[in-house]
Image (cartoon, rainbow, N blue to C red):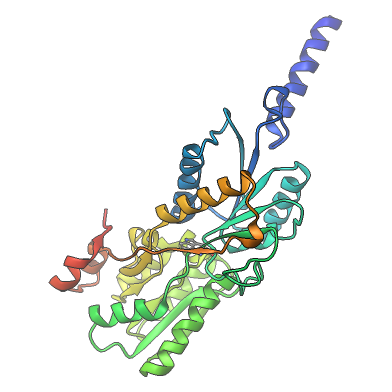
Length: 325
Ligand code: TRP
C-alpha cells in the first residue's frame, strides 16, 4: 500500500513538472527555453506565431528536441498578460517572444531576459525602444507598420467620391492610435472628413459599426487587435448597410473586410524567428534595428464587394490578391 502511494506521488510530481511551463524535466534542462506570449487569438497573430515556430525549426530550434517552447495566450486581457509575464520571468526563459503591442508592453518590464517583439505597429510610441535603428535595451523585434494614407489612396481608386471616412478602433491600443494619426494627417491634406468611433471592448463593436449608417462613405480600421478578433460582427453590419470597409491586414480582408494595402504576416513571422535565433546565438538586442516589412500588396475580398454591390475595376483586379473564401 505504501509503495503504491509512493509511486502515485512520484507520478503526480512528474506530471506537475511537465505542466508547469518552462520548468524542465532533467532530460531537457539544458535546452534553450523560448517563451511565447501572445495578446489574443485572431488569424493574423496565429499566422505570425506559426511562422515564427517554423522559422525557429529551420534555425535548429525544434520544440521538444533541441529547444523548449512555452506558449501562453492572454485572451485579450491585459491582467492575464501581467500574470503570464511574471510567470515567464520566474521560469527563467532564455528569450521571450511577445506577439502584438499589449503583450510586448507587459513583457518589457522584464529587464534581465532578451525580448523579441513581433507585429508591433509603432514600437517607439509604445515605449518599447528608444528608436527603430537603435533599440538600446534588452528588447527589439519586428514592426507591421502600415500606411493609412496608402490605404486611403486605394479607397479612392475603388470608391468614387469619398468625402468622409469612419474610423473604427479601440481606445486602448497605441498601435491603432498611431495609424489613426496618419489617417488624420492625410485627411487634413486631402479634404476628407474623419468621424471616429472608439470601442473599449469587443462587445461594443457591432453597435459602433451600426453608428456609421448614413453618416460616412467608407469605414477604416487600423491594425487593431480587438477589432480583428471580433471582425465578423462589424463585417455583417457593413454588408447590410452597404458601407465599403477598408482594413489594415490581409487576415481582416480574409475575414470579410473589403480591401487593404498590407504586409505579409508570413514574412513577419519568419523575420521574428530569425531575430530570435540570432539573439540565442549571442547577438545583442540593443544594437539590432527593428525590422519593417518590404513586401506590400493589395488584398481584396470579392464576396464582400458583391455583398455591397461594388464593382472592382479590371485594373485593381489585375494587381490585387483576392482572399474571398
Ligand atoms: N500590429 C498589432 C499590434 O501592434 C498586432 C497585429 C498584427 C494585428 N496583425 C494584426 C492587429 C492584424 C489586428 C489585425 O498590436
